[in-house]
Length: 157
Image 1 (cartoon, one colour):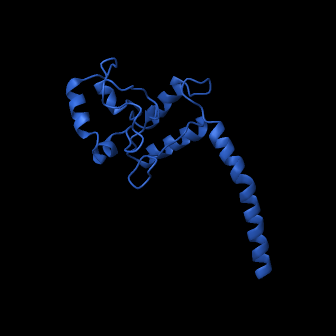
Image 2: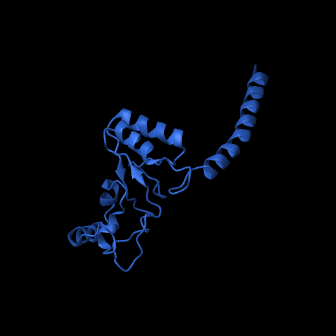
Image 3: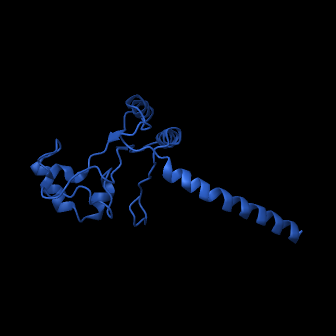
């Protein structure tokens, strides 16, 4: 009996060792990027939006309100963002922002501001169906899915 268990464990370990590198290589190399030909179409994003009751949000970096060259510029909002920038709760409650890698668009007009490491779209999930729709969309289109929640994830994913 012990020999059979060891044999089964060896087979499982071998299978995992064989499959894991292949999975990671595919996961890292085949995710579509914004603007690439394999990025989902506007119609696909609209279908996702409909499946999450219109809650799909185009991401806007919170620091964008401090950049006069950006459509989102708003001096009053900029003052608030500057005051809150070092506040962890501010970043946790913002749909797009993260505490640890939020440097692509600082709330300073002398700093560059681009979408950088921010997501392109966000689903503020309210129901199990929202989560299922977002996961299904990511699986079908191969876009990278990042779950933002509370907890300890220093890279801010």
